Image 1: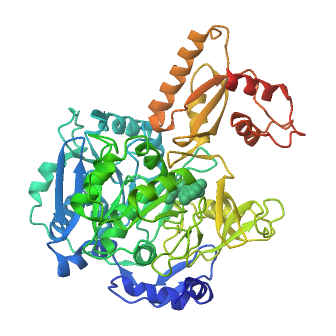
Image 2 (image 1 turned 45 degrees about the vertical axis):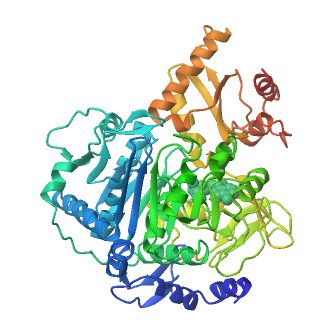
Image 3 (image 1 turned 120 degrees about the vertical axis):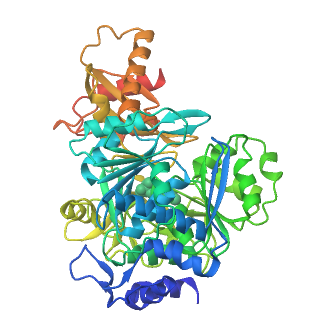
Length: 629
Ligand code: PRX
C-alpha cells in the first residue's frame, strides 16, 4: 500500500484503521467501540477495553524474550553502566510498585517523579503504570518554584526523588530544591521516596522521607499483579508551558496512548523487538515518555537511558554507545547535532555505526546545514519529526515504514496518519492556499495517544486549544506554518509566548513572573531571539523601579547577574535569559498590550511590522540601541 492510501484510510474510516492498529498491543478485555466522539473535543478511544502500559512494556516481553536487554542505563557522570533484561526490569518494577503500595499509593493517586536519568526513574514510571497510579515527571533541570506549582496542581500522594544529579562532573543537588518546593506548595505530599546515590549528603525529614534502598530490601520478592485499566483512564500528567504563567498538565490515557506509540514504533521508527533504540532526550520531556520509556519497550526493544553530556568524556560518546549496543534507531534534537558538529568527525568515524539505520530529529526547527552534515557523515537518512507534548507522537514526518517518500530540506514532511492537518488564516479562519502562512491546526477528533484534557480542568482544555477560530472547533498547535504545492509543511515558529531553547519548551510568561519578583523590577518583557546553536534564547528587557544606581556598565552587569540568579533559583538555569537589558520604556499599544512580535523582530534585526497602534515609537528605538550596544 502506498502512503496516500494508508493516510486516506486513517481519515476516512478511523474505526477500522485504529481497530487494526490496536492489534499491536495486548488487551486484557477487548474494547466495545474504537472511537466515541459524541462529546467533542473530548474523544474516547477503545471504549470499554482494558489494558495496562506496564504489562505491554514489560510483562508481555518476559514471556518471549525475558533474558534480552530491556533497559540499558549508562551514566558517564558516575561511570556506571547496567543492562537490565526484561525479566530483571519486571522484578525491579514489582519491587518499586510494592514500595509505592506500602506507602499508600493506589489506583488514580498521583506520584510526582523528580529525578535524573537513572534506572530507578524508569522503574518508578513503570511501577505507577503497573498499579494504575498517575505519574507526573518533572524535568530535573527545573527548580523550586516550577516544582512547587506542579506539586500544587497534581497533588501527589508520593514524590520520588534523589539526593542529586550530575552534569559535566558537577553534582546538582535535587533534595534541597524538592524540600523548598514542598515548603512553597500549599499542598504537601505524605511521603517522599529517596534514591540515595551517595553523591551529596541529604537531610532526611523524619516521618516523611523513605530510603529506597532500605525499602527495596523489604520487597525483594514482591509480586505485584497488574491493575487493569479502562482504556480512557489517565496514565500520566506532564506539565508544559503555554501563554499563561501557569503550566498546563497534559493528561494522557492508557489504551489510545499504548496503541498510538506501538503504531508509531512500527510505521515511523520501523523498530523491531530485540533491537536497541537510543533517544538522547530526558524523561522530564515528552520525548522521554514516548520514546525512551514507553514506545521502545512496548515494541520489545531495548532502550538506552543516558545520563551525561554528549561531549563527555569526549564527543564520540554517543557513537560509542551506538556501536556497543548496536543501536538501530536513534532520536535526538537538532541542537545536540549542532554541538557535535563543532568537533572533528573522527569522533564519529572511529566507531562502527553500521547498525544504525535512521536518525530522527525533533523538538525544534531542523536547519538545512545540520541536516546535510549529519546525514552525509553518518550515511543514513535523517528524518525530521514535528509534534508536541500535547500530541505525544509525530504530527508531521515521513512515514518510512509505509512508503519511503522523499524528504524536503527544511520541512518535517507531511501529515501523519490520523491527523487532519490544516493551515488556517489567523484572522479569517479560512484555509490558506499553497505557500500562504497561517496557523497549523488539526481537525478533530485527534487520533489516539493525544492529550485527553488539561488535568483537572476540562474547560481550560476546550478554551485554550479548541476555541481559537470563530465558528470552527479545531485544535490549534500554536505554530505558524505553510504547506507547499506538493503538500509538504514548513513550521515557522510559535504564535504564542512559548519559546524553544535547545529543543526545550519554555513559557516567556513564567520567566517574566520570576523576574518581576525582584524588588527593583517595575516591568519586564521576555522574548525568544534566534540563536545559531540553541535555535532560540530568552532575552529580557527590564524597566527598573530605581535605576539611579544602575547606570554604569559594571552596575548594569551586577544587576543583570542578580536577575539571572533569581530565575535560576525559581525556575532553573534552563530558563535563565541569555541577556537582561535595561530600558525605560517597552513597546506597547495604546491600550497597554505589549507588542511582543515587534519586539522580537527588532531583536532579530527584522522589520517590526504594523506599528499603527504603538503608544510611543521611541520604545523600539531603545530596544534597537541596547541590542546594538
Ligand atoms: O513549536 C513546535 C516545536 O516544538 C513545539 C513542541 O514542543 P514540545 O511540547 O516540547 O514537544 C516536542 C516534541 C518533539 C512545537 O509546537 N517543534 C517540535 N518539533 C519541531 C518543532 N518545530 C520545528 N520542527 C520540528 N520538527
